[in-house]
Structures are given as C-alpha cells and as structure tokens.
Image (cartoon, rainbow, N blue to C red; front, top):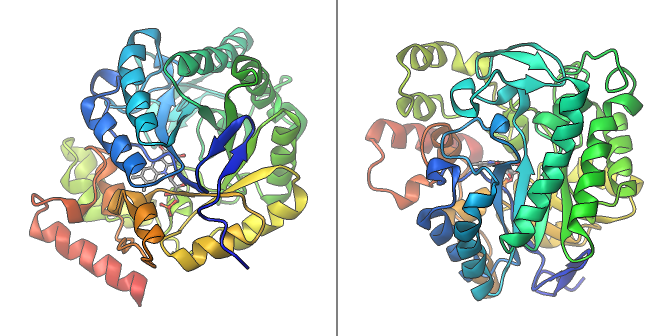
Length: 407
Ligand SMILES: Cc1cc2nc3c(=O)[nH]c(=O)nc-3n(C[C@H](O)[C@H](O)[C@H](O)COP(=O)(O)O)c2cc1C
C-alpha cells in the first residue's frame, strides 16, 4: 500500500500538510505560567522539522487547575506571547494546537492557590493533598471556562484545541468510578459520569465555531482495577463523536494511579529523585518509587491493537499515539484506519524526525530510557542526548534502561 504519511489530511475545518502531529508533552517552559522564548524555540524547531501540527501541552483553563510552576495557564494577559509562538509555528508551515485541561485532584495547592478540586473530595497521594468535591455551580462555571479557553486560543492564533479527557485529569476524574463517588446527576451511572464532559464539549464546540478544529484525547482504559475498562471507554468515545469532536486521540492510563500505562517502560527513579528539591519526597520516592510507579512493558506501537478495536466501533477521524519511532510502524498505523499519528518522545529526541523520514531515514534514536519523563516533574523538557550537564550516575541509569528495552 502506498504511504499516505506525506499527503495532506483534514481535521474538521483544518488541513495539515502531512499526517504527523507533535503530541502534547509537557514542556515545563512557561515561567510565570506564560509562554516564553524557550517554548517558542522548541515548537518552532519541531515546525521547521516538518511536522504537520505541533501541540502546546497541558494548558490549564483556570488557575485552580495548575499542578506545575512552569505550566501554561490560558488567560488574556498571555495572548501577545502566545501569538508570537503561533506566528513562529505558522511561518514554518505547520499548524498549531493547544491542549486544554484542568488537573483537578492533581493540582498543587501552592501553585493553584486553593484546595484542589475534583469530582469528589478525598486525599490524593500524587500531590499529596486533600481534595474538595466540586459544587454544582462550580461544575457549570468550569465547563464555561473550557469554552473561554477556546476563545482565548483562537485570539492567540491557534488552529486547533485538544481537550484533555484522559490520563486521570479533571474530565477523566468525573468519568472514572475510581475518582467519582458523587450521588447527584454527575455520579453513579456512566450516563451521569459523562455529564460534565458533555457540558465541556458543548461549550468548546460553540466557542470553536466552524473555523477551529476540536480534538479530544480520551482513554481506551484507565489501566487499573476499579477504573474505566474498554467497553465503557468505547461508549465515551462514541459520545465524544456525537458531541462534535472533529478527531479523537486514543490513549490510556491514569497519572495518579497508573502513570506508565500512558508512556510505557520504566520510570527512571534515580533521575526522578535526583532533580527533586524536597528532601523527604526525594527519600520516599527513592525508597518506594519502584513499587509506587510500576514498570509497564514497552513495545513499538503499544496501543495499536486496542486502538484497532476502537477503530471498529467509531466513525470519525482517529489519531494514533503511543510508541512510534520508526517509519515502518508509522506507515502500518496509517494503513490501519488512522488518519494521523502523534509522537512525543521521538520529537523530544529529534525535533526534525519528520524531515529525516522524508529524506529516507527509517528510525529515530529514542531508546525509551525515559530520562525526559523523570526530568519533567522538576525541570524543563529535554532529552539527555542534547545535554552536557547530565551526571554520570543518571547516564548509567538511562543506558541500563535503554538496554532493557532492547533486550
Ligand atoms: C515528557 C513527556 C511529557 C508528557 N506530557 C503530556 C501532557 O502534558 N499531556 C498529555 O496528554 N500527554 C503527555 N505525555 C504523553 C504523550 O503525549 C504521549 O501520549 C505518550 O508519550 C506516548 O507517545 P510517545 O510514545 O510518542 O512518546 C507526555 C509524554 C512525555 C514523554
């Protein structure tokens, strides 16, 4: 079959120059929760590297949804800086998307300025923090905040928004029976647990109008007992299509409970703790990290078999994400009913991977030692291969994990 990788493709009203999208991968480059020159330079380099569309990651729709100090918060005062980023992306011929969401029970009190909120109250070990269940009036306001974020994104020059409905963030916390214990019309049956998502989609769809693409990243399963399983996830994806999503990104995992289900492989505990500044957390994670964050085996295209099941049950445009680092696998995915592919780690390693493939290169050098993931919790996004300040002990850890991947 002929490769469609370098043919143009449509997502709603948007046409991309090829079938590649830089998936949302938290950059940690937004000092003061605003776009910076560093963020611009990174996305410009991915755009120059041939990508069809690049995605600014993890933008919170309200201050209450922030979990990192250098996380983007979509608000009016950042629009001039945001416009500079999208202009730079457009100058390189790529489209620009932004992932919008709210961290819910994973927000950090110190950064979000209040007790973190979620579908239900309780204690979240991830932050770690006490959490307050949202009042009905807050749920209505929150849905509106998603719509407002889309309007701001348009003013900032974005061509698409990606609503984050997976990975255990706020929408996912409403969907999942693990985090939603409500007894009102937002809890209990799947119908009720989907209500907040539907309200968000209603606001987002209206704000996006007919000139912005609406993408939704959704879970095929949460990845642990008591979370969403495949049959419910299919119903959720079908509902998202009915709510007017122009395309769905199929992922899985729950950051506060099953983080490596999302990205696979091992969490490099030594790297993770090396960069932490809180001594007791550093010590605790060093001692118990392997138990708290179990390894989930990685293999190339690890979500493909599940995604094919979803392909059968869905009608609209689907975007594949998960473990793509070779031309052959990308072509296989594009020939299996998926219109686009998203990549994170391949483009962290090689921002110009798309142009390299156009020139005949078969694979990217990412070895999935996951240094970028261990580092992300404290510092800006980076691959160890681009740095000369990574201590030998961490290089040894990454080499060992990469070797395990190959074996
Ligand atoms: C450093 C890093 C940061 C990430 N941050 C996000 C994020 O902010 N939002 C999100 O939906 N996924 C995030 N992800 C997950 C990726 O978008 C993607 O779903 C996952 O890494 C699988 O794709 P890959 O195998 O091409 O890396 C992140 C992944 C990495 C490696």
